[in-house]
Image 1: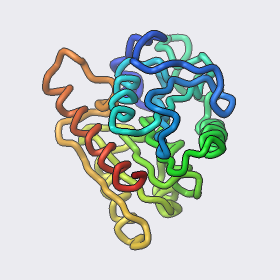
Image 2 (image 1 turned 90 degrees about the vertical axis):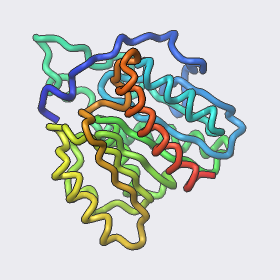
Image 3 (image 1 turned 30 degrees about the horizontal axis):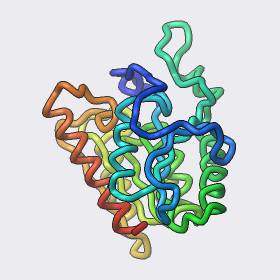
Image 4 (image 1 turned 90 degrees about the horizontal axis):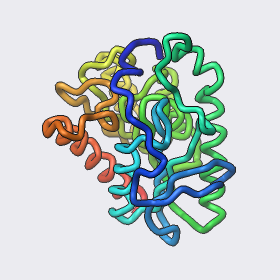
Length: 239
């Protein structure tokens, strides 16, 4: 996950952002939640390295909840999201926040939701979270996943996917280049038993779906296009 793009445009984190609420424990993790917990369909949003307090991520959670899903955005970093620091590189931070632990925590959250009667669960992951949901897509924990500008995902990961998978990628991405995404698409196209949707957004850069400038109409429109694709995928498989 090396590369400056991962850390560009850091959001201003806010514990008060969003129209939902923060709960102390869902499957052992603090989480932002939106929508009705009585819904039979839930979406788990797995953040990028900046964590669950990012305002644009919570705004997306509210939007997905308004479409009829119960949405959970867990604090996978236990109060320690990445903060740009010349003395602490992203690689140093990752030593304490691996995606393997993220996957383990995600399964705990999903098991909790299932114990509450939620029948259909999907997961969407951004950058760091893209790798986490890729691991989920190899299992029966979820019914469908969406990866948005994922990082650390390899060709071997794609060969193991068994759940319907949507990949929303950036044209300009040094972490997961468009050429690699096209290889992902080729592999998925051979897996006739697994539905897939792959889209490379022209002019988009890594992180565009959650780290956009809300005052830039073009950036907002491009992010909203991806958000619609995400919701369409979950409507198809969770409703």
